[in-house]
Image (cartoon, rainbow, N blue to C red):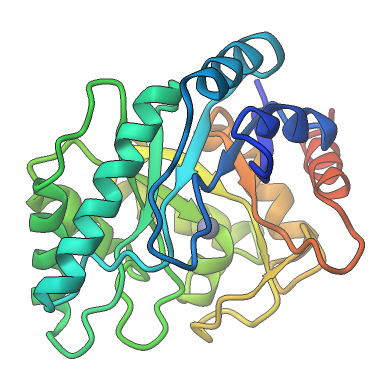
Length: 277
Ligand SMILES: [Zn+2]
């Protein structure tokens, strides 16, 4: 079954996300539990949580994913930032349990001079500090790899999965992977990249794909999303990816631009067409 949806707003209450997802034609999706640009705790009341759970059950196939705050930096060598990051992530996994959401997605962050090896070790040990509820899994997201940000190389993701004592899985962002140097613009490149992912990380760890096209060329490390088929990845790459039998059951969550009039609805419909639905 094709599971495709978008990152939708929770404005006015987290239960509103369900209607927002239905409105754009999605059957799974992603939310922030609070503004991702500031340190803020998810503040989810019992009634809205209940309405979210029952609304999801009645209207969507799922899964939902919580995307953690952009301020979280698990790779940091700084004690205060690490403590804040762990605290923020703990609140996200607790919110996920309250909402019956199986996944919390996080970027590894930047080592800011500590070096790749230390940065990855910091991320693994920070994740080890979490008390993750039973039915919740943290997904480490692939990164575009700008500056000292880690997670651009599949090896980084594999190292953190290996070194952490948590049962972690992975979210592959197509725009990020492309910017990090994995050529998803051709059928050959898509096949090779998925094979490499399988060899390095394991496709059994792939629980979500952030399906985004990229405004910038392969290997530029520039993270800017484009509409499906209209960026540098293009229709050919996207079509190959969404039809590869190895990932056909992986939920596709779109984070395409919303400011230029082309909606999530348009992008979700495009994915359905590429899948021949
Ligand atoms: Zn993403």
